[in-house]
Image (cartoon, rainbow, N blue to C red; front, side, top):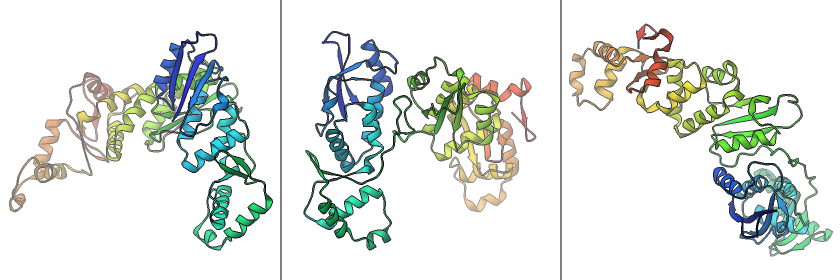
Length: 394
């Protein structure tokens, strides 16, 4: 956790905000609005204090920063293990990094450094250095490498730099410029995303000026991504949707029948619902959408909002299977197994399907049990009063 005290440059000294980064995006923007900063890519926040468990990044005090850059930096730092975090602080202090852009780039280049703070075992030192340099090794490589020799060579070269966190060595890896100071690199922090939207300016789609949205997200994150591209509204950008788990029908509705940039906020709402479904529910929802044939992204959201008003039983292929399931597998009835041979499961299944206005699909049996007018309109919109699917009527 990175706690930073910020003040707008021209604001009174008592008008400050102490924010624990990474913060929720709505909370962060609320604090920025309170300070009179709003959504911006400019550096309008003056750092008055920095607090963290390692006491690092004090070089930021007195510097003007952009709160969204601090947020991205904190998200990167939040993913570090103890060794990575300590190495990050050591490099930042040794190289006197006082620009957030440089600190963000450092988070992508820790493989260029190795921090040693335990000199009791020369083989362990060599192994840590080599792991930091390569970032990964196979079991076979670990068996065959002479880490003692690597540790000795490290000492003989005497190129370590003493820091408050340990002795810092270069691994000779060449650092990359990942963050250009304008568009944040691709990096999903929460891990709760179900889809990614890539935004590019319509006039120059190959410029590298890309922004990434990890859905579901807060609406203010969409606003900020558009603003970072220098736009006011998303209609001047091209969009790509990465959502591997969607079937073709839903994906085409979101990306081809309608232009994605026209309904970014609606797709985000759909992702918000979808993220709450378990794997079985996700498959069931797609089956519902395939059966209902929504005509707009907004109608997809309506179906998702009312998902639990549907009964979905996967694997049912015939009315007889449905009748058998209801009598012997649904748990609604206690039937002696010896009596099942006397039941007409097909007739019972047909009766229930007609009574429930149900549909047997390739996925299984689906019936709408709710009374939400918007859902009923979607189910009946293809034929005013009813929609015929597979010979059965809703």
